[in-house]
Length: 189
Figure (cartoon, rainbow, N blue to C red):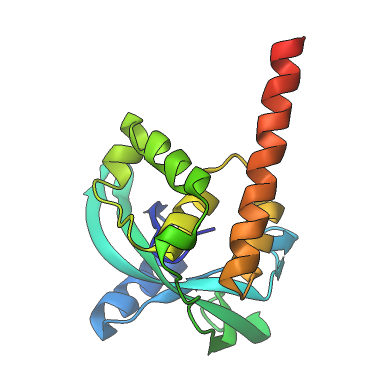
């Protein structure tokens, strides 16, 4: 799963995905990443969630053992229709690009969200993955937190599907409160 603005590193080795990457790079287009709801990607037609993220390849390199490494970046949320499998054994669907959430001024965003992301950004992993974060963009702040918070894939999928910025901030605050309550309970034990 990947959020708008987030990056994801992938190792590609299956021929069908190598062909997908080749086609994407040749045609200067991206592809969609969607979370599997049920089933398996290998030798199966899995059921996937209807909202995913259109990504573009932003970097690539050759890896050991004939692997291709690519880095993709989330560009826009999409809704998928008429999902199936194409002749290349790849999931295929009609895509409807969803409006990107409209940011509100960061001064209207809960300072706790900004402070939490700033604290996370001090960790080596986050700083290496995102050397620069635009703290003036409330949507970037929200999506970076969606990616970094320890939540289940289903919870993150629910966050991805939210189509109003205020609801996204509200849900993030609720998750953070739950995590703080768990931390307080651990301290008590």
